[in-house]
Length: 137
Image 1: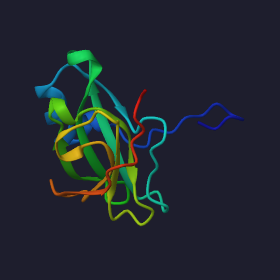
Image 2: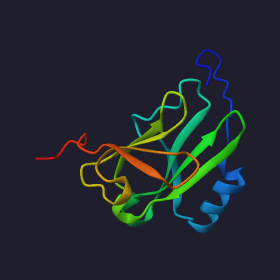
Image 3: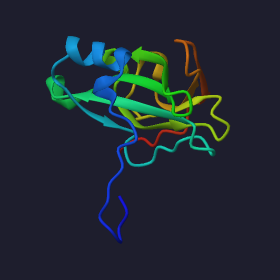
Image 4: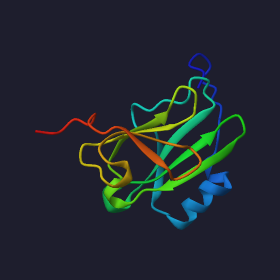
């Protein structure tokens, strides 16, 4: 949005993307796309990581996906299991090489607590700093 003129520009309507539309059609409770409050795109703004969040199961995160803005292509999706859906934020590495996932202290599965990196185009993930999640006391 241009704050001086009030003009807005739509960058991407993911409901029109074949990959994301299929997820939305199969999961009608999905209502929100977000990076949470701390996520960042790659430094050149080409690669973006997003969370799709649903209203069912206490508004839990349902899917992760990586989008290439330059090519207008979804590079990969990841279905979040219930035990690994406690994600604080998601973003990209500065060069766009990795999806960076900040898991809450009680997140489990392959995306357990702490900082996890994953490729944007497959299901492989590597736990980078598993102890970075703060523990509630």
